[in-house]
Length: 582
Figure: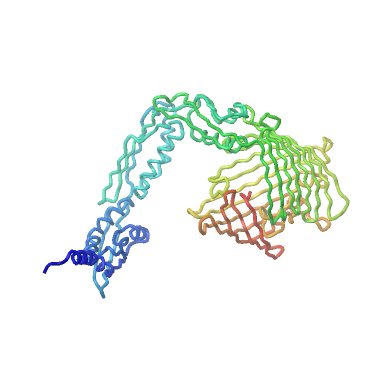
């Protein structure tokens, strides 16, 4: 019998569809018995699992996947440090469905039994070679006794190389490396040799893109000079310092790295100048001071000298502030000089305060430490629950020191912040009283695993004086509120006077808070706060607050919402704040 061409085409199509139809009715499942540390990886990568449910798998294809599985498992476990796995497998049919069972014992984890770290190149000729080599060895992240994995081996080599690259030797490279793994002994002997390449030094700073500002403004902000040893940290600090000014919208640094020309390498800086004027306005609400509206304007080239002039108005329910300031570019020693005027009104806890401050300040930021000196004239009018007002004034020289060592300045989870202040005035020298004011506060972030941390926060203050009623009110101490002792109203902890709460001569607060990441940028928190303010240490009462809260890591800093119970008031309060509480 001869088939017509049309019949032949129909038959070919039917035959081609037959295996697919068979595969569509073919089913199997996979059971994996393995330790929790490796089971998810096997389930995500084994072909038997990935092809499960596919219309293209039939019994011959399943057999091929089943036969390839032991080799697949060995390839997956090797980089994890398991080179002698024991694998048992079965495959059976039940009711038309094939059941595949895998039992995987990864065997002993491979342990590093030897780590030979060598350092060659011009670095050996430096007088401090031994010290540098000791630092390299101390920073090696895969020492003897640690479990070996391919990832940890790669990271250890890369981390140590980076320590050379960022500190004087940007052309450093790995000359050789090898890892000898003995599966029978579950051991790994590692060896790596780094070639430092030549030591680089900074050359002249070459600036392009300036149109409005003089080049000396940029030169003075440089954290290095010609002839200094190359340092990637100094470059990043310089770039960050420029970007944190209102002068530039974009900053790009380039240092050409050529091992043949390591001396006096030019630092090429390209900047884009930002607009001179900037205005901003905002609306908000704060659980401490209520609803708020604000307006500000800035001139980044006041009088054409690169001076930064600012005007600001902040109107809140309990507090209103007007301020004006003028800041000069840094001088040749890195100091910034500033002058300012501030007019403030408060109505908090029964105390009304009108205060004017006129001040001069100089400050310098270097290696994470900010030091500032200030001279301020303060005049305040204090009125308690409508009683006649009292005018106090003081001419105050002061000193402040702040140290920051945080893993993230806007949302830290590790590191410390410490601030120390001291200042005072002398009666008769444009001051209504003699006093010495000292204050310290600290926040310490302690990681607990990879997704949580503990924050310890504390502050202490003392005003030495025989006439506290003659000290400008805002230079005494009150406590309570979102960034103080939660569970109490803003500045409601202090000295009670005629039905109001006024400032005391002494202050002490402390807080411990645990934060746990929940999902994405959200964290949960539990905390305990304690503290208060008083007229003397003997009468200081530590008010306690307890609570829970939520944190959201926003682009401008952590948003905190807390529900706190004040043990003294026996009531719940809601607090929220934006920014790093300190």
